[in-house]
Length: 293
Image (cartoon, rainbow, N blue to C red; front, side):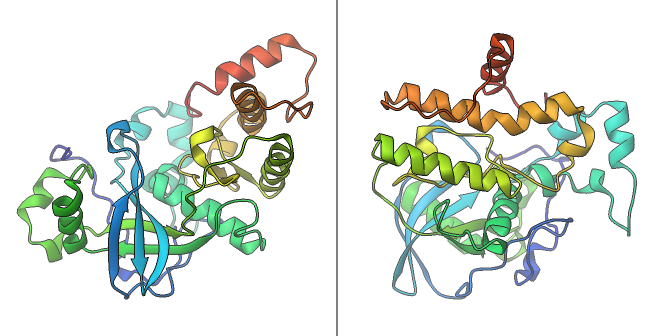
């Protein structure tokens, strides 16, 4: 559905295309090396009825199979309205000409969340080991968008309404991330659970907190989704009190244990071990709420 006129545009120099993103402090993702090659859209892999922030397709690029995750446009107004007076003042401080309040999308836009998470994994030589391999980002033209509309009746990109009055060459490009195509489901066995937990702890060690651990975000026993991940350095870890930051950082562990129970995996391994029942209750509750709350 188009967004109403007056909401913020998020062009952010995307047409430059060959730069690492995002431009804020911290890890960045580089473009897909073959981003000028023809993209053949084969089928939609994600469920279009579930909403969400993106659509995932099986594609062929240069004759090679990939998964392409195309993101809807992000509107930062909701995040701006959720800020209290202290947070707004803190984020208004400019350093080196960069003002975080003007670039909340760099920290909360699902596309940039994935860029930052994968940027860190690639920098630490973990790409393809603890999560499905990422090959970089790609900007899709408005012509690609028309193809998706015609081929899959896919038009829910949350565009600004007035952009549809512009010719395709003037519209914002769709932003996408290219990953290995993994089609096999996860086998929920104890040995797989041990490996998955090891991967999760490795990511945490390197400052990547997924914030959305659930069965549908795994394929073949590896994570495929970082759209709400928090990757250090992050403004959330500067704004919130220590106890809340600890809760955010432990959320993945509690969610992992809950996922193992839901999938009826017979294992004694536990990601999160605490004796305080009140702490457990709060942690489980936090997995069902937004991290900006």
